[in-house]
Amino acid sequence: MSSQLFSPFSLGPLSLRNRIVVSPMCQCSAVEGNAMPWRRVHLGQLAQSGAGLLFIEATAVKAIGRITPGCLGLYSADNVAALRAALDDVRSFSDMPVGIQLGHAWRKASSAALGVCRT
Ligand SMILES: Cc1cc2nc3c(=O)[nH]c(=O)nc-3n(C[C@H](O)[C@H](O)[C@H](O)COP(=O)(O)O)c2cc1C
Image (tube, rainbow, N blue to C red; front, side, top):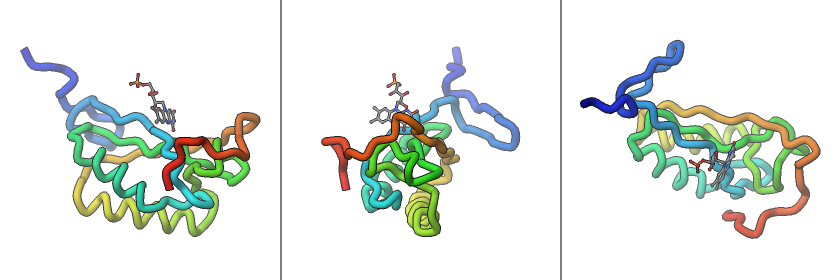
């Protein structure tokens, strides 16, 4: 019996090789919203996992909307360039489709970094 989990899935123009999706997972490792070297390690190893789709963590659309100061952002040209460079590296080793969770933490935004932050 073939498993549906490992069967291809189409979502609009997107073709996924299977139905396994890697959840967005905050890494608390950004500086001023910029992706740092850990991003390449984190996304790079997940992009080798064989999942059908990989999501980039909750990414703030405004600096003030970050969950913590270590959150990834897409609110400045520097943020765009840093994430693009990280993704270009990941892309050179994997063609796994990558999504992103855009967000704004509103009243839950924080000025304090979590103890588990990795820079
Ligand atoms: C380290 C870590 C970071 C997470 N960051 C996010 C996030 O950025 N956005 C989100 O919606 N959920 C986040 N989550 C929740 C996961 O996406 C997922 O919903 C949760 O782990 C439950 O799924 P599971 O039962 O398969 O672990 C995070 C979870 C973990 C463990």
